[in-house]
Image (cartoon, rainbow, N blue to C red; front, side):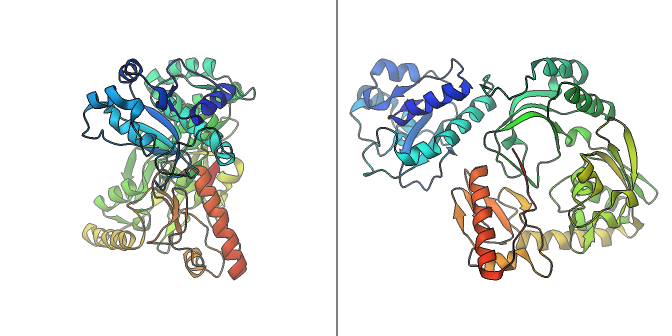
Length: 454
């Protein structure tokens, strides 16, 4: 870590809230000698902490870059004499072979060629966010990072138990949730597991319960916003590891981790229509069952006959469509904390070519209207009765409105997107701003569809 005064404060905050791994060193970029530069050049990656001006970066933004075409020898002989615009320039000049990393704090420097030395009030307010981001990046790179929070569950024994039950290749410690959400946002979770059978899902769930470790379930990570500080406990991921799809007559049985797109494609190949509406919904069958996903005049409840679930007491049960009590973005399973393991869909026969045409039409409509090219959690707000959320947001003049790296989509104002380096804090502040502005102008309080995990 290169330090211009802020870095030392960041390290102190890190030490107060985390057990600092031995891989973290701090250097003052203004006083670096040739020996120190040579030593830093042997590191796996470089992290700079700076008060950044003119980059458009939000606090905690992660920058990845390719080394500049500047001779490294020139840096080694004169780094301490260089007047650099900011530490991003210094990092680029080091010319690392491995991925470079910078964490920026936008507080506004008095001059683009001077460092802000010391910790300003603006920096102090953002320091915990930067430190949590640092911890998440270290965990992502395989370093052991542990918080000192006394309320944090001890998962070491549970980890060992699950490695034996599921296989070590299906158990991940300190796993960054940014790698498992469509928003590309989220700090590390203590444990993430990827079971491959119903028995393994049940074993993981019950083991966590017995250890008093909180459990959450995720599919492809759409419709979820994970806190920057990460999550206590365990996340069970049901995605490609739990994604079998079987066709039997006009019925389709799909495991919870099967993507909606995969189920729609399997149905189309078998000449079964009825699930086209979900072919572009960015999630899994499990998520669709929990949320009663819908699009283009279709809803999950319109095609689902039954759902296989794991109850909180560990019993695997079949839930009928009537028992599921589906409503708008709601189900009994959501209320009762059931884990969806799979679903049976009832479709109807049709010409595969005709089904494909309908799927292609929906895809084209989606691509033309929705910001699919940018990370998001999908539609951000529920549809208020009698209104469209996107229209309300647009009429409030919020198209393109931005907080840090989070932005109201220019393409579809019903979506909040990660425009680059967005944090959960950015997204939450933007959601609050949108809610307040729309309510002030239209008298309608928008309700988020995205679920916050913290």
